Amino acid sequence: MNGRRRINVAVVGDRGVGKTSLITSAAQEVFSERPVPVLPPTRFPTDFAVVSEPVDVIAFDTSSRPEDAQAVDETIKAADVVIVCFDAQRKGTLQRLRSDWLPRITHLRPAAPVIIACCKDDTEETLPTDQVREFMEGLIREFPVIEVSIRTSSRKLRSVLDVFYQAIKTVLYPKAPLLDASTGRLTTPCVKALLRIFLMCDSDGDGALNDAELNTFQQLCFGQPLTPDELASVRQMVAERMADGLNDAGLLFPGFMYLHTLFLTRGRLESTWTVLRLFGYNEQLRIADSVLDRLPRPPGTSNSSSSSDPSSSSDGSSS
Image (tube, rainbow, N blue to C red):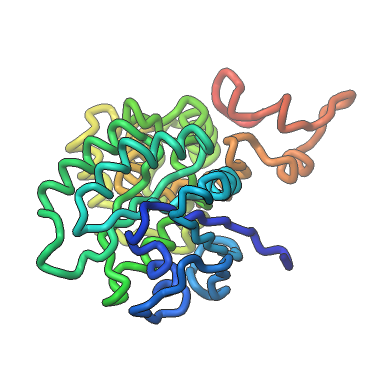
């Protein structure tokens, strides 16, 4: 598709929860009082979302008829991300997230991230916010594939774009390779990758990133340096929360890890992925073949991402 990455989004849920309206209101910015039963595959405008790479987003509406259950299963299997809808005015549709939809999705497509869309959140008849929040908190603990839950109204065109934007982000900036959902800690491959990056940025080799090194890193990854006030704020935040994250020489590796953990737990996965990809890592947290091919090759050896990853060396530095 002209070099654009295709993202298949499956939209599922019980009958009448607002699946079709969610798609049409997001893709076309219109709301119909009488939506068609099931939409054909719907391609979003190419400028729909500003993300790190060009994407083609295609939403797949699904039928609620029992006789179409197999077709729904096939749509889930082919999806890069699944949006599960429930009706904010019908408690049964919320409960079926736990009893039916999430077990079904995790069985059919275990690796697919899930976005929960609380549809029809636009009348006084909606379920109490505290009740929904408590249910969702338990659901997220039980099903770590859930990335986020968003309250929406297709009628009012409220937060419908955000549902699909978050869906795109979960595909482009996956959480699973970086963060262990059960512990809330960085995964071992992520720690190794960040250690390699930290060591590469520590130009004087003293084990800390001073202000100049931190700003070089910031400029390289995000296109602009930190202001003196921002640098002071970073130092203060790390000092208050991470006893071994800072010393007189600058930011230590535990502090560097803490900042990235903060990015991830606050939903800013794109920040950490921007850093990782700039330093040559792919979504499996291996050095990409295109980067390895540019590295000097010792005589009699070949570069291969499956057998040689600089982050796997004993000191975490580039091999």
